[in-house]
Image (tube, rainbow, N blue to C red):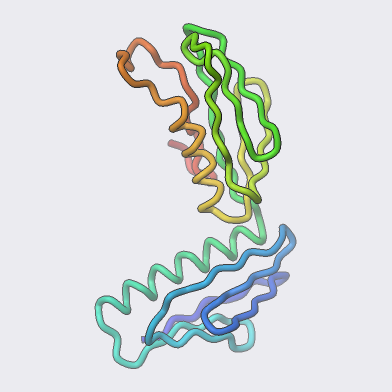
Length: 176
C-alpha cells in the first residue's frame, strides 16, 4: 500500500525520522508521527507513506496520518478559523482576553470570575459578541474554542431557559 500527498507550491517540507515540519506563508507547523512499520519519506514534491504488508491497523494509521498531514498543509497556507458567539440574555456578561488567558465576568450573575487558559500559538480577535480564533494548527484552534465553550457550560439550571454562554458557530469554516 502506497499513498502520495502533493506538497503545494510555496510550502517547504522536511522529514527527520518520524517528525514532519512544514513551512508556509502563515508560519511553521511540526508534528511527530508514531508510524511503526510504515515508511515515511519525501521525494520531489511529494510526501510518501508506504508499507509492504499492510494490516487493518496499519491502514488506519496511514489514513489518520494522511488526514493530519492535509490539515497541516492547509494550516500553513491559510489559518484555521473558529467563530464563537457570546449569548447573554439574563445577565450582561463580559469577556476579556489577556495574552493566552480569558476572563468571563458576571456569567449568570456570579460574583466570581471564570477563567480559562487558551493554548499558545492561538490568535484571538473579538468584535462585539463574536469571538474569532485563528491558528495554523487545527487541533489548537479547536481546543481553544472548546475551552471557551466548556467554561460557560450551565449546570443545575434548565438549559431551555438559561441559554447564556459562549457557543461555537463555525468549525474551521464549516457551519454548525
